[in-house]
Image (cartoon, rainbow, N blue to C red; front, side, top):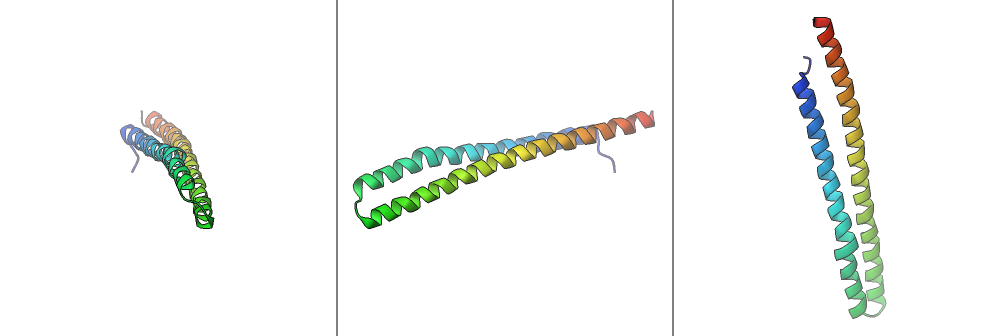
Length: 104
């Protein structure tokens, strides 16, 4: 069954909304890594000395990098969703318009 223009528009809006939600999650993760996590590691390094402290902070830095990479991956995924949604929207809209012209 062919999609209505309303359905095409709604699918496009829903995809953009989901991409925006991913973008917000990515932003929250970056803030967490850059502010909260870094502050915590700095406090630990200042108050805990020795081999174990250094090892812990090194592992913490690795986790921080992984969080940042995850955030960047989410941003990239959001952009792919937006681009795919736009391409799909354009194709479905064109198809809808062709069908409408042939019916009239």
